[in-house]
Image (cartoon, rainbow, N blue to C red):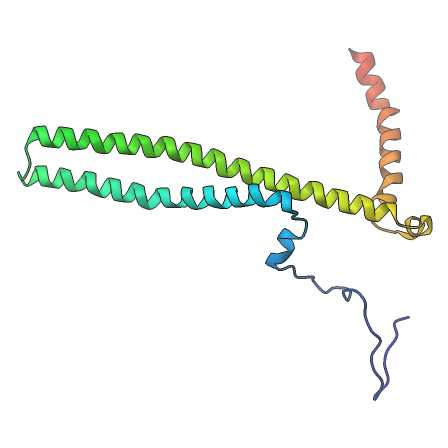
Length: 173
């Protein structure tokens, strides 16, 4: 039965979230498991992400320059030879930018994955170490999570491995 407070009394202190209340995590919680070893991949991932972000405006600038050359040719301001040489140069820039973007995409994606895996490794290690320090009666009192699911998984595996479906499938081969 839930405890209620009488008028004039302090309500009981709640040590955890109230049922139905959602917990909110801030930006700092994303980096809770970051250690000094993770600074290099994080810094490189940020740098490559910024560099990749600058590629789109650079492409817009190159394409603008290319269309400017086309409009200059259309207004007879430049000759066909100048159009060809300038267009070839601009296409070389687009090819170089495309190759650079390909590398930057690979680099920033790989570094973010590495950083995330390092974070996950630290989180798993922290959770494992915390579980090692728990008393056995704590595990007996857990109603959610793995201790509650384990008997169902065992029953499912037992049923699946001894079911008539598998026997008939094997005999049908």
